[in-house]
Length: 426
Image (cartoon, rainbow, N blue to C red; front, side):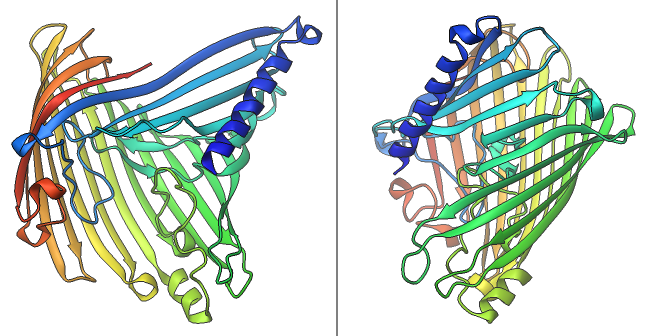
């Protein structure tokens, strides 16, 4: 099915860009652009087996340096057309994704986003933009563990308006819909709608702003499945000019159908509960489920010789009455980088994840340490591309034996891997 969708959206994108290039629009100026992300690598674990990734059971993310076992890429193309700079414009943007685990074939490209946007239509309220389509909408993550803590509309058909200047901040509104196929008792589809509201760029302190975020989720009811709802909210503070970098802190709370509190990657907007709400008791239990989360991250450019990124996540989830899940997750990570020269550097990453699975009455921690050597074109934490060699060691709770490190480390509570990786973005 996804290949049919991929072909359909590709045809739409090509047809749209071609139509914008016809003589009737010959007076318009086209601004083509591309950007993306790509990584690939090769590695091995004990005894020459394939490289294994180390992630704590129940943790939504893992620390990534020397701990990624796939080829992955996101490639974006856009075409912006306008008569004169600063006047009304229209833009079409498409992003495709490729993925392949080490040793496996790379999947056919999949359309991640394809949307159209118009702007500069009015000077009222700060020239807001209107968009329609499938979009990677204002998503936020922590780089060193690739944790997407705010990502509400990915893979949804959506639309919205962004950048409405209210004086105290900029308001953005968006709504998206997605369908879980064949999840009702007789195989009918169930649809979920997400309404996302954000008020951003609110001044708080020198070089510091806050963003207020709200989410309302609603699913339809049919074929014995009851409709369900949920809401989530949060506040994010971003401090720029923070020791040469930035600091970003967020608190989030979610209930019911929005109980993941905006977290997710891939089918981030679609909830796994669709089709499972069959009784009034199910509905009550779902809508009483909740998540509370705190995240903090920063990048510090300490000196010409050192950079540093830290990460903190604390999360408590309780949906035990609905699906039996109840756990706390604490994640701490740091990645310092020492610059030997402008083009050679040595990063070290230490990541600690503690998971208390209260439903299963099991708790434990995973510690992952990676030492790497990188060749880069320039200094700076965000400087890419880089080519790196790495060695990774991980140690985890004995209760997790057989759940970490794949078949290579089955029955063990520690393991290691080594390899090479290339990473870039533009």
